Amino acid sequence: MEQLEINILGCGSATPTTKHFLSSQVVNLCEKLYMIDCGEGTQLRFRAQKLSFSRLNHIFLSHLHGDHCLGLPGLISTLGLLGRTTDLHIYAQSEAEAVFRPLLDYFCRENSYQVIFHAFDPVKHALIFEDHSLKVSTIPLKHGVPSAGFLFEEQPKSAHILREMIDFYQIPLSQINAIKNGADFITLEGKTIQNKLLTRPADPPKKYAYCSDTAYSEKIIPWIEGIDVLYHEATFSDRDIARAKETNHSSARQAALIAKAAQVKKLVIGHFSARYPDESILLQEAQAIFPATVLAAEGMRLKV
Amino acid sequence: MEQLEINILGCGSATPTTKHFLSSQVVNLCEKLYMIDCGEGTQLRFRAQKLSFSRLNHIFLSHLHGDHCLGLPGLISTLGLLGRTTDLHIYAQSEAEAVFRPLLDYFCRENSYQVIFHAFDPVKHALIFEDHSLKVSTIPLKHGVPSAGFLFEEQPKSAHILREMIDFYQIPLSQINAIKNGADFITLEGKTIQNKLLTRPADPPKKYAYCSDTAYSEKIIPWIEGIDVLYHEATFSDRDIARAKETNHSSARQAALIAKAAQVKKLVIGHFSARYPDESILLQEAQAIFPATVLAAEGMRLKV
Image 1 (cartoon, each protein chain N blue to C red):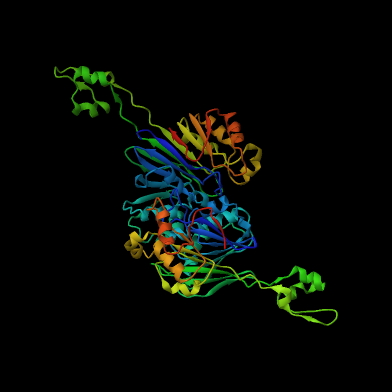
Image 2 (image 1 turned 45 degrees about the vertical axis):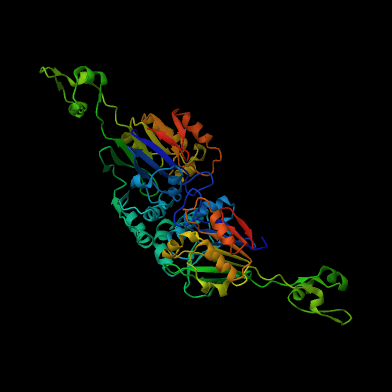
């Protein structure tokens, strides 16, 4: 998986139903898996989607409501039973460790790997994770409890070297990486060939944001401006806007307004309330404002 | 549901798979639901089997391994979100409350009902629950950690009154209950009609036992002698008996030996290891010793 891909494991809200599992997604980049949220049943969906437990090393928790994190103890237990030895990193608010540690100490005491909690402050936008291919930062959201979304950004990529120029100038293999990273090429005759003649620009880094749970909040717009894909919660239809406000959730229309204002390329709505047997009303409501909207669904794989 | 019925919600072991959910069952009597064990995903299966959350007031936990109880926080959270106000009673070893309470205090702090833990000693056979229709007692098992099975026994029932005798003696409605409970009937002429002429004996109380997790243990036989249905774990095939011993589990053959020695009427085997894609080898192994054996399965409803 060279390309950033999102796997939706669950996109229901509050309680699991026969239609939807609870919130969880996996961001897949270069066959490393980064999980966002972990509602009850996440490990089941993870397995059903044939994802590899051994490629999962990082879990990001948006907030500490049960429907977003009560699958964590079971998942951690299962990883232990599978013989895992690699550390598992969990990025969450500071309370998470205090809340989960006693349970893990009891049920996972025979695990042969460590669970390491990394605390972040959900009210601040900050870089909380970085490796050679990806960086993750928080997006402060507006919810009844502290809640943070996550912005996943690919690291800047190298330029593409032009195959025909390699052949034409007989560029040795040893210099390819330098040229991809911007170097000019000097021929045996001492002539300088400018980098721009040898390459075409790198693909822009792909960007994905997960914003759930949140009420309508224009404050998030600067952080998600122009990104490729935005997952924004749309728990309710706008006809239930009073209920949305009361519970600090968004309507599908509000999700679309955010996507439009931020000029994102694609919107995925999810975190559906069980009150809508036919979610096409949510889709229509969002598409009326932001046509490039799709409904999340369990099993969905989305190339960013 | 006048008759005792068992609903199998999950009968896998250790980790959930695409084939099996984790351990959980519901004993249904007179439309009251008594849950045994609560692995992750239990609330999903409960809903899928169209059982009513409002009829569930009692949960019995056999032992504190994650695959038997990590569905508890999510279930308790869901009951809260559904607006429950009735107390929920949990029967478990004393450690259970210490382990789960911090998580419940955090995630379920807005619940409008109480969760009440009732501690029992898993190494003793004792009556731990009783109401007008049912009694539940513990069956000490042999496992790596303290583990108890449960014996569910219907309370003794009233005799059946003979319809034709009511008509013949014109027995008034007011005396029916007394006669069902053993009283004779005195006619208007002062003649005593003996109870045995008016009734046929009550059905014997049905008995069901859940024995999981456990290694082979003949000590449990006296408690389950002659019962109607025995659910006994059969995690392994006898060809993996070394692994069964090492992990304090039973083979299908061992489950059948217990059923045979206890002269139970029917054996249900479950808690299957994921290593057997075809569980018919477990069934054949058990049936060779105890023919009245069936394989547990998610969704199974079994009249006792």
